[in-house]
Length: 82
Image 1 (cartoon, helix red, strand yellow):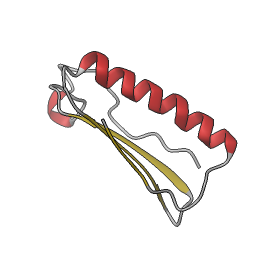
Image 2 (cartoon, one colour):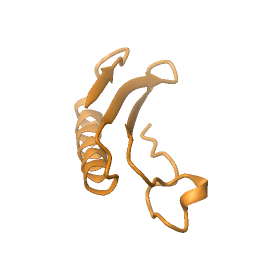
Image 3 (cartoon, rainbow, N blue to C red):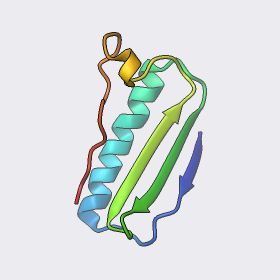
Image 4 (cartoon, rainbow, N blue to C red):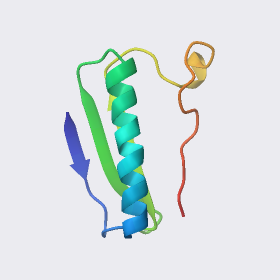
């Protein structure tokens, strides 16, 4: 697993808690369903530091992209917390 962490500033405790549970779910799903051997996670900010962005990618099969909607029921759009 690799991790890139580059937020401009520390988020509020509430956002940190949300990010923690979202990350745990994303990592669990990747480990359980992807069949991959490598997970890459990125944590960054966007929108002049007002949005926290979590990205979890794996080298496994499947996914929730437009071409895989009938085969997989993963997240099809990003979640935003403002």
